[in-house]
Length: 411
Image (cartoon, rainbow, N blue to C red; front, top):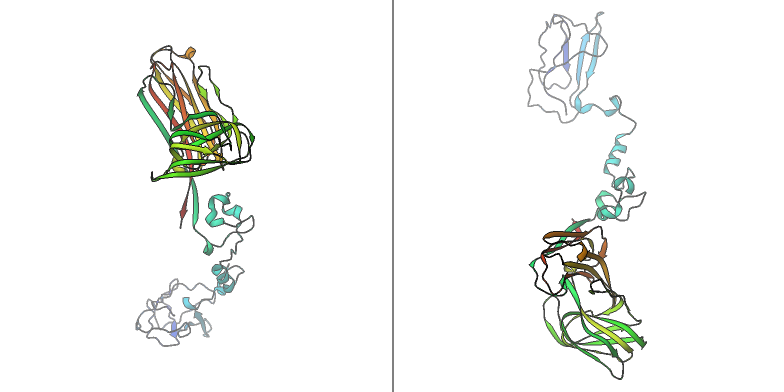
């Protein structure tokens, strides 16, 4: 479409006249600021100045770029009439511009419309860790990347720092303190075979662990019968059963510290998948076991979070007597099928020789890197405040720091 407006001639002698015509007759053109009776002598080289159009009907509209052609006519010093077409903006072709490059319009248009990665961006150029940008770079390798119009939901992985803390002001005389769980013996050294020789015991509420210390026939099953408790609703199922497959002896690595406190350790022990409560019977139709220890165990699972890394165990307490001593242990319980390992991961030791009265003692172990799957695994802390027949410890603080890896989907 032709531009409508004003033509203004600058940079010339205003006493010299000129003639301007419009071929399509959109209206009357008036050139101001010079004597129209005088012929303008204009050089044939470019750079005539700025032209302004005035004095025509502005409601007239050209329908295409060919409807209006503006020509500037003049007479040279010899009296010859010369003309030059005035370029209208809508008629300028990009080939008439300088420094336009080598690509035609069709090439540029095809490039802009392409969704097939025309720049051939590699995964390494887009991100250094394709695993952290699974939604964008899923399936990408060193030479390809998914086109932008095929991007899926973006999965973001992040870590959440959490702390489980326990505070006790004054602890009365007691033996072992348990935090976030614990293990207790229900029966020791009993046989279990097809005579039948069953094991009958009474449990609180929780999972049961069996340590098979000795036996002749180790290829069979233990059937556990009793009331079970749903861990989410608390609903009780009477006379429920759980079947444990046995294929090898367990290893008991438990020992005692310098004050005689038990430090637990089991490899290849067996664990129920259900929580049992009350009277429980262990039976078998194909095993001959001569020495079985049974424990009840509870442990912290961080609400079943699947990716947990324990970072730090931190204890702070006030010793009220110079004869005080204390020993603490962090245990992990890791489940594999019907088996579990119980490992003493960290020890905090405050022997009597290093204790003075009326002082605070802080014992910390960091950078632990203990990985757990909270859907099945967990941990707990035992602490022995000695002497066990005294209350020499006050203001006890125990903290367990961990990182939980989580994912979020951005869609």
